[in-house]
Picture 1 (spheres, rainbow, N blue to C red):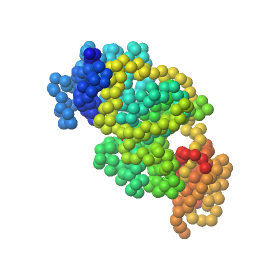
Picture 2: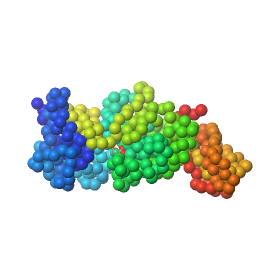
Picture 3: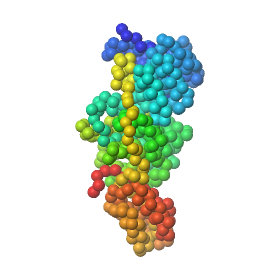
Picture 4: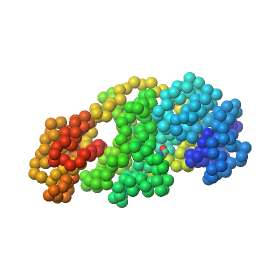
Length: 426
Ligand code: HSE
């Protein structure tokens, strides 16, 4: 019976899930694959913290290098997160001839080119199924199931925290700060929620998906990234009136030999399946040229779902599955956000006077932006009222110029809001 020895660095939330699956499903994996997975060592800086599972003292160490240098260990699993020292641990593990499994999307998105280069030169595998969408096997889908497809587009809800917040705001009519507070109380959002709410975590995951989809080097710096902090509950209400939901979408598509890479709040028709993905769940829509539209749904975070993905990578590497190595050498231009085309939702806070709409629509006309529908809510003799406009497809650079002009009109009382809209053009 083939035996594979594993060292895990990081005994936190994901580490606990991965370790308990490794131990509890050992017999199942043995029966299914003929391989015995042996947990040789677990490293964590803090060995005293209470955990869901306890391990024999001799399995534990506070020194990660003990694992990296152990000649008996075949696979090093990195689950500490962050860029440093995770990168040094992984590079050194590869230099010591070990395969690596990681859940670290920030590291792969920002420094992954170095890691994959090192692994390729040494003929070693780097498994990263757990880095995108936790328990959804989206990396396997892209690399294996859809390997014969040219990818046309990916639309993902790949951050559970922001999806939870937007779902709360949509269902309960509460504002962003209150929804964030609830997410923190429930342990979904971190004390410092920046990575999630500013869209950075989604951008990390999108970087990885786009590299798999198009074979390009990991290009995190090219991702346009806008979070959900400015979404107001009134925009969610207006979106509902037009038949849309607001979701934080990570989008990559190939259009005219150029790749779009963007994360931003998006209005999605409420009858689309992805609109119905609520709470902390994730979903990824992938469109391939042969397969057409496909959709994957599941838990994008958490100890056991993410642990399940980690163990799947360990098993694949143990089985000698070679599909894990990937070539990221294709060259495509990544379209700057100003060059994209989209439909748009606008909310202007405008004085309720004759001629205001024509002033605003005049600026739209000057910038080639065609209006699809308009609603004005409320009535005010003195103050401003929301004037909401949906447009047909327009160029982002025209939109930016138009908004700048409109914001300077004396009849406009506050900074205007715009949200990109997906769906079929009417
Ligand atoms: N913070 C992430 C989320 C989970 O909210 O989905 C880890 O990727």
